[in-house]
Length: 212
Image 1 (cartoon, rainbow, N blue to C red):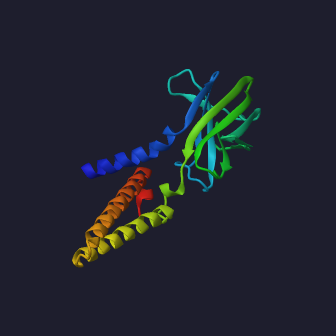
Image 2 (image 1 turned 180 degrees about the horizontal axis):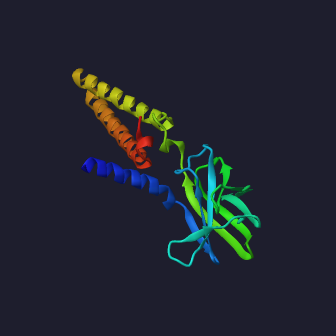
Image 3 (image 1 turned 135 degrees about the vertical axis):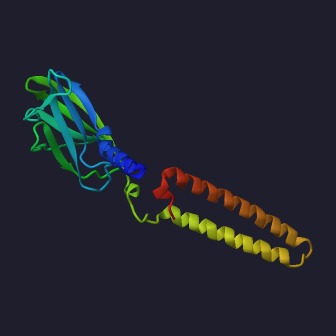
């Protein structure tokens, strides 16, 4: 029973999570909610900007969807200094709207709304959830340049360790062997520090980025 309860809780959390990323603004008697149709949004993958426009009822928890809300509103997607006017389509549910889009860069997006809803002026810049890199969902993780760098450092450390062992086994000649071994030891230490730093940076980027 505990397992079934835990599974139910996880499913409930997963179903509720997307709503947390949506942003709601209040304009006069209206509430406008904006966000992504599929979350998390991933760069290069087709998605859609979704909107819900409602008016609260007199009783708590009741509301009505506003039809034709974007008839007199210009909607613009904003990323940094780039803008794109988007065409809004009506969902079969009253008050729901969407506009297909393929986000081409990771980072923060916003939606600008200018115009009016049934005579109520609207001028809002609404932030929506950041677009994530494909590494968030990649499986198996693609090997990148960082993986190649880590592998190269590992090979270098292994080669240096073998050189040290070879130098330690050979007889000293004119005091040169101990010096060479000391230099090799310092090289190993330096390579190990760099390797550790790279590994730490990759761990901070997340599990997908840290995979070899």
